[in-house]
Image 1 (tube, rainbow, N blue to C red):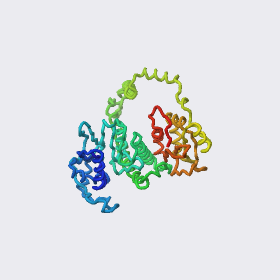
Image 2: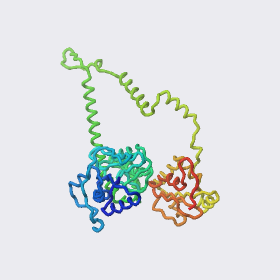
Image 3: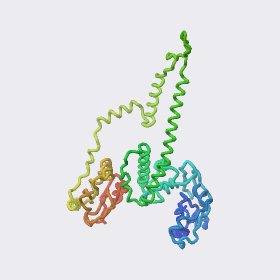
Image 4: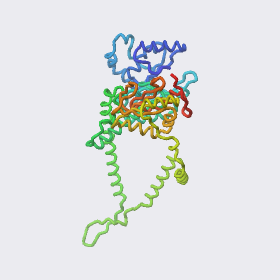
Length: 450
C-alpha cells in the first residue's frame, strides 16, 4: 500500500525503486488522502504497475473541472515528464476497510459532506496517516478544509483513536504531540475571531499570534485563515442568534397559550379579566426536573453517585499535596557557572531564552510550573540558566529566531542536543528530553556522550 503517490511520475518511480530494494512486493493499493497536487501526481506510475487507486470525492470534482495544474507554473516542465492527472478507481466517500494479507487497513472519512480529506489507520501497527489534517512545522491552511469548527472536531476524533505513530502531509513530527501545534493554532484562531465578532470595537493584542510568526507560511496563510474563519463564524453566530430569538418567541407564545382564562364580566363593563388563579404554576415540577438534570449530569460525567463524590471530596481535603515533591526549577546565575556545575554533576545544561513583554515566554513558565514530569527531568538531569535577550546574548554564539527558545547542550563539548524555538516547538520539550536520554517515561538515565 502507498499513501499519497507524490508530486510527479518520476518521484513515484524513484519511491517504487526504493521499496523494491527493501522487499520485492507489488503495490496493490494507492490511497490519496486529499486531491492536492503534491499528493496525487504520481498516481499514473502506480496504475501502470496494476495498483487500485483510491481517493476522496473532491478528486472526482478536480478531474471533471480539468483545470491546468498550478504546480507546472512554479517548476520546470522537464521535472513533469509523463506526469498527468488521471482518474481514480474508487472515489471513497464513506468509511471502509481493506485487507492486505492479515493486515486490516481502515480508510476513514471524518467530514460531514463529501470527502475532501481521508485518513488511513493501521490499528495493528498503531499508526495513522492524517494527510492535511495536521501541519507541524507549518501554519495550517484553512482553505484545505470546508470548516474551521469541523476541522477542530476532526482533530479531536483523530486524538481518540488508539495510535502511537502519526504521519502527516506537512512536518516531520511523528509522536502523539505532533498534532498539538495544529490544534492550538486553530483553537486560538477560533477564539480570537469570535472575540472580534462579539466585540468589534475592542482593541486586540497585536502579538496574539506572535509565537507563530517564524513558522513557515505564516505570511502566506494566516491573513487568509482569519478571513475564512471570520466568514464562517459570523454566519454561524447569526444563525445561532436567530434560533435563540425564535426560541424565545416560541416560549412566550407557548406560555401565553397555556394560560387558562376565565371571562368575568363586571357590571357595567364589557372587559375580559384574566384571573391569576387560573394560571398554571408548575414550580414543583420545574424544581424536580432541575434536580433530575443535575444528578444525571453528575452520573454521566463523573460515573459515580452523589454520596461517593462527597466522600472523595472529603478525602481530597486532607490528602497531602504532591507538588512539593517536585520543586521549582533552580536557575544558575550564568552559563559559566551552569557549565561548571553540569560537568561536576554529570548533567546537561538547560538554557531558557526569554525576553521582556513576551507573552509566549509567560506561557512557557506556566507550562514548566504545571508539568511535574518535565520539572523532574530538568531538575534531575540538567543545570538550568535563564537568558533574557532584552539585556543579554545567548552564550556560545548560538542564534535564536525569537522567544521563547529552549536549548539543551553537552557541557563538555558545547554541542547543542536540543533547540526548540517558539511555543509551537517548546511543547515538544518533554519528548525531546526523553529522546536524547534514550529512556522511557518513568525511568530517565543520562546518555548524551556525543
